[in-house]
Image 1 (cartoon, rainbow, N blue to C red):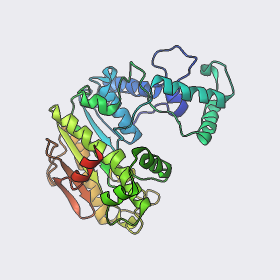
Image 2 (cartoon, rainbow, N blue to C red):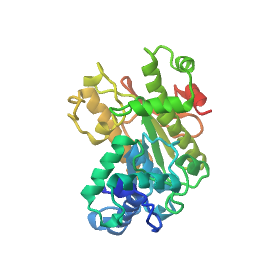
Image 3 (cartoon, rainbow, N blue to C red):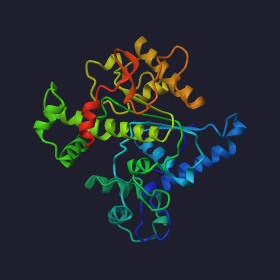
Image 4 (cartoon, helix red, strand yellow):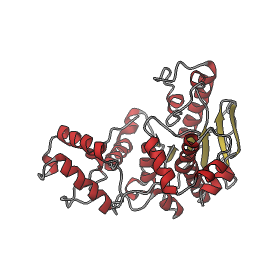
Length: 340
């Protein structure tokens, strides 16, 4: 099942004029409310309230990691799957979120109580704000529901010690990632010479930057969380998805979210073409891994390539055009350098 929650300004706005506790993380509150509903009602639908698995990609994975760290969500789910999570990203402080809130109020053109403003006006102001600023709406460290950044929380061992699948795609670029890539390269201080050394054989600066962005924002942080979680004794399974649908191999750019069509079996996703026999075989295996994990906390099962758990050995499940197999991480040395 899926659960709706408030997005954008409706879900993450901090109103500087508000004195309500927890202001700014309403979207996360909605998710916790949904989990309480599942816990209290799912048995009536044949479900088990003590065997709940959450999985999400990108923003959804960030929410789930925050729920793993939240005392308010403790015990409401028993397993998690984090796909393409930017786990080293720093969440905004209250002060930073309030600054975005003030910008929003200016865009709204109203000093009235925001709770009385029609949603359509809020969404229109949100659109105006995003036209002039990249400072959108997202979870923030409010000191109660969210108290720390994800990587810091896992390093401190504050997360729920539940079975975990975590991984990323070999290409995490997307249709709107060009500015993100430029900002990541600029903020890192990495030089063109260092990029060429890290990624020999690539065509030029744009490909160097795109690969660096994928590794720095997604691949290395996924490995970090896997290591930290496994170190506490929890079953942890890491993957990297490098498969490209056969119909897209001539032009494989834009891989963020590519794994989703295989998990959901959504053939004919715009731009993906129709699944080939090889595509369907991989999709069937991925769904089996995910379903097995949801049932038991172990993705392995009959007729599936064995998936080694992370146990301080830098092992992961590689899903490539050539097949599916557990192995040593071929990017380990490069990710070591990026982690420094």
